[in-house]
Image (cartoon, rainbow, N blue to C red; front, side, top):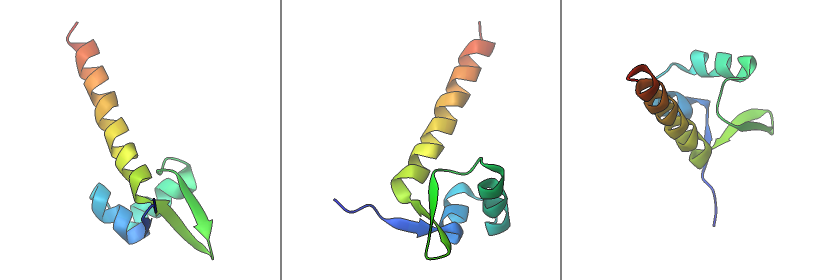
Amino acid sequence: MTDRIIFIPDVARMLNRSAAQVRWMVANGTAPRHAKIAGRVCFKEKDVEAFIEAAFAEADTQTAAAGR
């Protein structure tokens, strides 16, 4: 199974953010799992999808806690 490798502009589209915001997330340590390959920051598409799912799971947990 081959994982699709994507780059900052792709991640920006997936997260509805600018490329500059994604670069800031990388520098700040808050971006999805990534690696630098041949001088470019690369992401596995499945890692970005997992990052999004984790954000929704955290939001669900916070909503449930607020409802108690």
